[in-house]
Length: 497
Image (cartoon, rainbow, N blue to C red; front, top):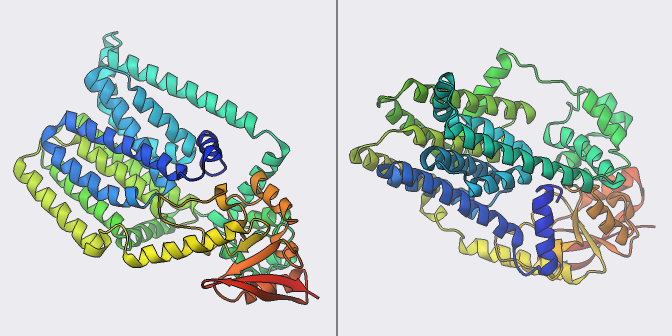
């Protein structure tokens, strides 16, 4: 409920309370991905049948990464794009209000509002031709059906959004949730948007006892020490951060960083290549001034959205964000193409096919390697062993991927594998996590895991850095003792004499 939105979280938590033997979280995403892809294909198939083959190849290209490698943010991008395509098509071509489009739109808002807003900006040009014709009719004092139905759709969406915010604010009005929201906002400002330079602000770090070894742990997401990295410490560190200056140097860094980001990611390279081919075809055709305007505005909004994302992420590009913007750009360009000859369709199809083979190689077109299956089977064995030992809390490094299994059909007897927690997560300090901690007598993992009969540390290597941290801040004589081993993972008990 914390990271995926209140209403989707409420639905999923209710489903998991019924049974944990079904992967509801993955099925929820797949359901809306299928609706999204089906909606996009429906729009193109009904709008320009000769381009259906191109659309199909394009969707397959994109879907490899979106279908078989589920990622929540990318799901929101795609469902937002699909909702606008479907809403615009239904109103413009069929003179109907799309209930399904509104449903997908509302779900996207509920899943992640910031992603929805960013994608909405790039999708605005879809409505330019319809709004332009409505404007011409308004000059003649005629309110056409397109404007009426678009206004009704927008009104319904705004009302649903209002209901969502009322429910969300009422549900998160307790002091516990307010405390978490304050903490999480500070955590995001550092962990997601960048820390102040350590060498430059060493005095500020040292004021709170944070040295370079401690920073190494924190930068690897093992930051959950409310006594050292307190709200007060985070506020002061945030206050000294240098703000990014929007100048020529920033623009230069953006251009260089974007090029590297595209080149280093084969999926993005594929999308840029497809976008370039489609643009080439677009500019060899004759279009109206409105179409050219729409494509121009799309390009500008694409650059602006990437600039804002680059700024907010402390001058770092994130794949799940860039891929969403690129998918929107490619589909909108494709939407504005006129009928394309069979020859051009064939050439484009061949180019994309070759690109797929080059990008993913033949081996990557398989959903799983045999070795991948063995690795995940091993993880599942370890996790089930942890799950069986409900009397103990197992603490791990946040960067350890033990609890990440890229499979739809992984089940546990109890939801969320509650007795395995990381040293720093998005859910840190949330009411759910703190209630789990209290059950095992913990409010601070680093401090309270020592001499705790209900808590272990689990890792597939030594934990000398964790022990040194505990010695530095809490127990000078702390040491780690291996009490058992689950395959390659060691289970440590932390003690201090």
